[in-house]
Image 1 (cartoon, rainbow, N blue to C red):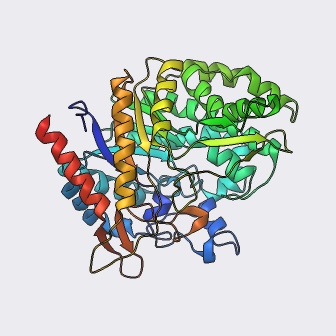
Image 2 (cartoon, rainbow, N blue to C red):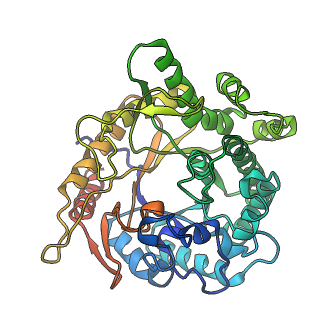
Image 3 (tube, rainbow, N blue to C red):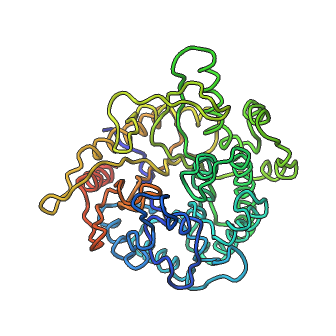
Length: 444
């Protein structure tokens, strides 16, 4: 494989509720995911993130793992309920102290922290007040962002406001498969807007509190293709692409929404909640980088619901999630974003795969994941050769962890976690990545 640029960042990513555990320790309040996971029937076998990977207590071990693998950066999320247990008001210093300890441990090993402010764990008291359906939540989010940056901004310089707002809006409020588990079209669209307003308010707040901050957002982007050339399917694919991709890209990169998507939404719900003052605020805020979370493309045809499509089953190899493995689509996606939203540095902030891993004689032989990583890194390199300003790649995930509604049944980590003992075992994919990163450094 050819060489990445010398300054290219290789990292790994996690999220607080998926790895931290310590759900009721040191003043942490409940999140909507605590409530959702403890509701019978919502997660696989009723599993929760109460303990997860216990990173809250084992962060030093995990930082050493990152160092040993040669990772240059760690993307983690800060749990809003640890900082502000009620969602607003009094800051919980014990929560701040944990992230100070984690950050110091990273910096001591030369690992750059990349902190995500919202990876889905909304404080339950705000959830009870309507959550993201309530416009006030956007302002509470900005207050939380300011509180965090005030206390950590001298050590953490790179920030992500939101992780995958499309998933929060659609999977949590349209499909009901994630917290808070609602199925309401009007609610989902309102949430999508309020998340974008929250992002803009947070950007404004961070800039007011730190001159060192580089600010981005992590969007889950999925290439969408029509099943065939039938006009109805082509139109459905275009609107679905707008719903998943362009709505959020246009909002954070241009401060506006695509008109065809607004027209489609306007046929279904009243859009009067989109205030001009909100749009003006979004227009004023700019990002320093864009994070792209890529897992798979979709092939669709028109469905019965105006905002839902029928997704065709994949052909060819798939992950244990049933997701098609299409590294070439990552190259195309990066080229598309660079073309349509020029001048914004890009990072792949999540990319990875679940496979059915087992321990054999103390080793985890996950050749399929190593191949997945190799092919997607090759796609990244090809995009760079095409002129894309791609600056880093974060594998999802550092650790096997709580995979939301799937509980612990799906393993995405490059490090195996025995949930009974919390033993960490670097998989063959981790060892391959270590050698790959070392070879890049040697040849740089």
